[in-house]
Image (cartoon, rainbow, N blue to C red; front, side, top):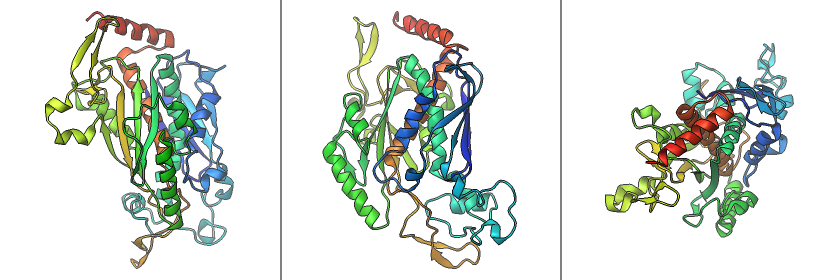
Length: 391
């Protein structure tokens, strides 16, 4: 069974993660993970934090001489900005001046759209900083590190996961872009968008939002290629692959909606225009579909087509022209707290979602095929492919 956890605060000393269940014998080096981390930090519209951090991972356990051992893999991503927050975020008590060298630093003005208000009430915290430090999207750095480990496992099974941006601020890229046909264009784009004309318009929208102290959201798409039919299950709701993927993507800060295949669009069409006709390819001995409106998932299971998912990300809640809020100390009307933040982080969110999808797919594969070593997993996986090719 594959499972994982993360820990750490935005301005704490480091972010930590642990992943258990990766088979032994998987080639894994720091560079594999750092490539994912570097991509997460890119994107036009990012804030000042990205000029401070240069994320890199330290592997603390579970890997020896570049190969996984089968034991838990512990990772750490240090926060370079910790030096500026050492006193404010000290785990040990700091006495005097409200625990800050420059006076009382507690926050009492919650930001609309953030975890500030609900979190401070739920955890009975008088200082909102005790909530926003963990709810910050900074925590996704170590999630990306963990997802890159799962991505390495998928690489060995010839399963690829791609992500690209299709909309920012109401500007849409050309419809139906296959990210594998435009891989280089997406990689070279500052917004991870394959449509250069749309990207130019998106950049103008981001500049306009920045000048107004505002923020922008958007939509990104994820695709998984190489999955054979039967990953996931229909027998229980929590075993459905689409349900697991939706949960993982919805767990990313600021994501407000997830759809598979044609998603909401199918609600307004008749079944004859929605469901994908089935064919049999006698040359390759596989069942195929003449369309992919289902997004590669039927009955909670992969059906052999590309998995296609899209997610909607709301604008970042921290505004440089803050909205109205309430001071939780005296209940007076005030402007919300302003914390350093991005104008647009949709490209970064797509990288985080790519990592989350890798984790969910790897978990589903290991649940289906098992294996304590990569050799055993490969043998089980190949045996399953051979079995279904005879049906």
